[in-house]
Amino acid sequence: MSTEEDKKPPYAIINAQILSDYLLSLGVIPRCTVCLSESLSVPEVRSAAGSVSCGTPLGTYANLFIMKSAYGVNANINCYALICECCGHVMNFRAENVLAWRHKIIMDKNRESK
Ligand SMILES: [Zn+2]
Image 1 (tube, protein in one colour):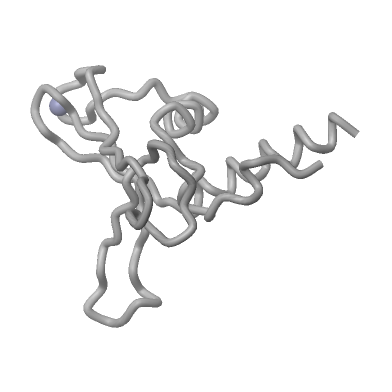
Image 2 (cartoon, protein in one colour; image 1 turned 90 degrees about the horizontal axis):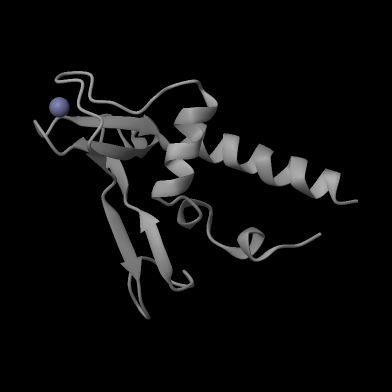
């Protein structure tokens, strides 16, 4: 079964709710590791024609940050961020882990619907 999500670019399918679901699936209650506040926000981008990336459908997505390595693009780390609204601490989660988890959820749903 093909869904709309299958057609989206891989980094576009993650939004704040999905990132929250990912953390809950790990048994983690999202909270600041510095001040323990549970008031967190996910930096988001809203795609519009010609923005974010070519072919990205309209929608609001978790912003993807790239930690650049001095040793070349193969050593870069892609991540999604959670920012504490109390102290400003930024927590990063490796994008590939989130995407792999999300992909598994979609595949499991597709299998169940057959
Ligand atoms: Zn904090």
